[in-house]
Length: 417
Image (cartoon, rainbow, N blue to C red; front, side, top):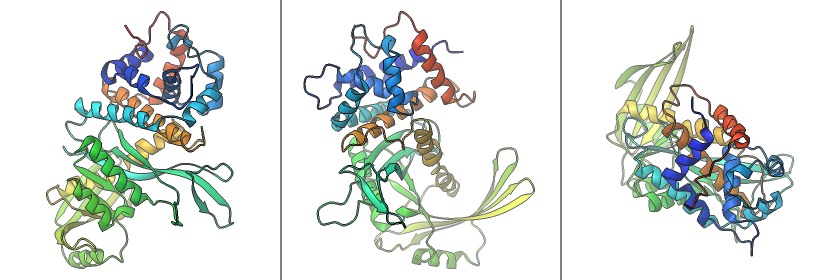
């Protein structure tokens, strides 16, 4: 049993990711502040790691001086209004620089040296709504009108994260822009995703071997963007009206499956997979590049029940084994199950902490950094975390308890010796 997750976690963050130096580099727009930005950044980051549900709860922690033993002596604690002002004027570039440093360090430490799926480094891309309101709004809000004519204001981000093996790391995110100038529509998910993968390539170069996405991304313009940065795309197809779907299904109609294999999913579930695989299909808008179309037919046996499921996939890769493509398209759900669900339930991603033009993005940035650091600690510093079936929420509860019990300890994040 680890005696102190709190000490071990901050020592790991300081020793491997130089978190203290990164926190000191963060800036906000306050003039002659009485509370240092590094203090506010540390408190916000730690609060999200611990899964605080609201700033009202954080205010109680500050009033009860729960952070006193984690900060240097005579370091002034902020009030909750000071934290809100800091976030509303935060320097987003410095926060993005901190995120980039952590991800680059993870790559440099060969976190993904064995790949994430069958030796390939696979990243998924998808959109996620941060929060919505019918009353609160800011200049960066996206809008939609429901059937009753009520306007909903919300923020949305496109996120790219590793999928397959642990840890799942958010490589980057891009906030979608509201309608501008003469445009009468908010920015779409596809436009934001193109901007995101170009940014990630500029920051990390070959950040993935394969990018996997759902049916929304089955567009020639998006697939071309992936090819332009030297990566392969694996995309789900659902629209049976597409010519490529009609051509492929017509070719496969009277043909035996090219591959068949069986997968055991737990002790009671068994899946028989059949695959029809052919290269050389033309896709509208990509006449100069042929793509590969794979049809999967799954027979799912669970208990005494049998279920049939059909999946269509388009990929630009000519060499990835069909079994690996099947794993990739199923592991795409990791971005939903192990990233979005985690940050929504534990980090309360869909809660409006600060609603301002800059504050919303600052909160999103801090949450994603907190998520990445937590995942790296769980799966890179705690040996056999998954095999021991440890629960992240239990460890976070232990850390919250240790805040009050810890004695005679200098937090390495603030240790300048």
